[in-house]
Length: 168
Image 1 (cartoon, rainbow, N blue to C red):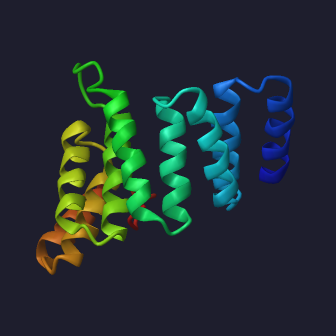
Image 2 (image 1 turned 90 degrees about the vertical axis):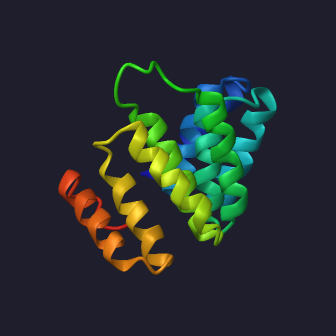
Image 3 (image 1 turned 30 degrees about the vertical axis):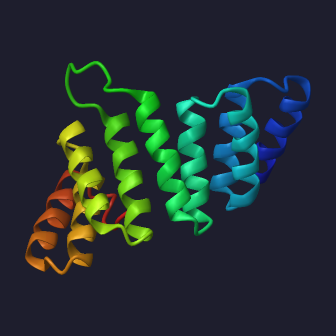
């Protein structure tokens, strides 16, 4: 099904080669289908059209992280955060929390644990009800050897969102 979606969007791009929304959807379908290198190529083409497109930057970060290139992924998540801005400031910002959380995971994978911890804290600050932010912070704390703190954050994250029992 995901391969069919990716191919559908590839055909759509032949008709509309500058349609960023189609690149976003195709990139997401390729990532979901495990075709990470193709997803990164798709995102690179989209970024040549609009280098600040936040959804494309997010897809690129995800594709690179899943392809085992976490340091590069963190760079793209950082660009997405810069492009996204601070949201409305009128309450929890789940999109910003997700961006910081994903960047934190990429930094953790890259062995940049202090930076990862900072990102996870920013994710929680952006949306205190974003459970995966707590789980990811717990994973970083565990990596840092702060096991009691890690357990508290993982438990808090699971309480907020039982579907995210493991770091993303």
